[in-house]
Image (cartoon, rainbow, N blue to C red; front, side):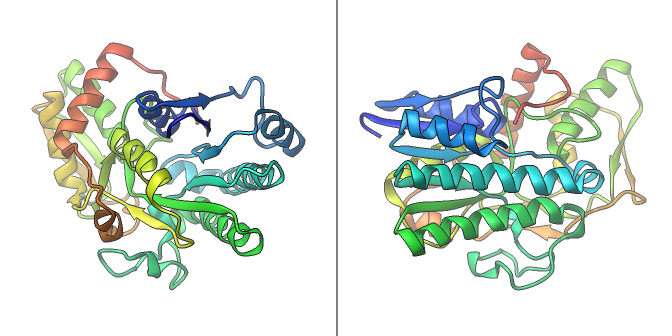
Length: 313
């Protein structure tokens, strides 16, 4: 990282802000620009910014994100916005001769019934989970875009696939957020209301893997220095839990003592999603934060900040 200028695209979101915090501990200059000054969906603006600043590396953390309901309700927005953001940034990087870029994908790129744990080789081997296929297709296109610029122009662009992330500056809206922040807010409000029970969407049986976002940020900095492969690399916590177990853990952290009621009329999504992160482990990286420790840290932040319902990506 020494003396390098690194643009973190999407620095106000949960992932981008964590990467900015991590880079602040390095001898690097971090470049950021808000959406009030740069619309990442407008190609000439992106190209002009990158050509002027000429960073040594770019971390592409900007994206339109949301949970099952948001993905299902706004398929065009999720597909278009994510496609155009990644296309504009990757192409602008190439035109400005920026030779190093990290594209952040998602575990949803893998088939719905992929082998568990999911190896990187499972990509494009089966149908996607329908509830988030629009976002997944955009992320797959981003991976292929990085590979194409590597193949045609020799660019050192890499792709990192994190599992489900959570942390500070997450989206806590009960309709559009992912499961962990939605449950944290729901159980917090149930505790304040003195409710006897709280409803959890789905059956509670699907298994998910959760990684604290500050651990992902550490992994991104690690990979900037140590990975230069064409294939995407998985970055996960190494273990999964059922949604029921997740809910129980959040209840414990929040202090909600009521009963949990599961609503099987709501979608479960993919039955299981545990990634094979053995390649990351082989490079010498592993996460530092347990699930309960991470949830406790997020809850402390939530109580202090009382964030609005919509996160900034």
